[in-house]
Image (cartoon, rainbow, N blue to C red; front, side, top):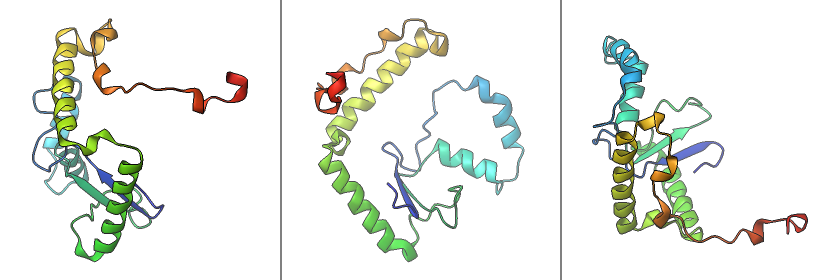
Length: 155
């Protein structure tokens, strides 16, 4: 969610503690990880890797002062009004768009389906997998009528 100056990011599965890559195979990145491990704890690369591994639930960036989104200001009380405004804007958008991820039971079902599909994907060869139709997220795809979005020439 952004107003042009400020950007609020909600990581649906972020909690700042859980490693989102735990149990996944990252062989292709082994050299990069080894290089990063040798860097000082304060290095930008190490900070960014950890932020990606264990993202917080929310991030707030001042795009004017920090266009590369390196400093999360979400917990900074100086920006409480901006944070509150963008959270309210996000909540209103979620309400108006009937965002199913507002419902914790939906998030739970989606997470379980994602894990099942990931394990299946991995067992079938991962990125080398030929039959992508084996993965199934159909229960999360609502019926959709595209007609309101089609121009007259398309009908």
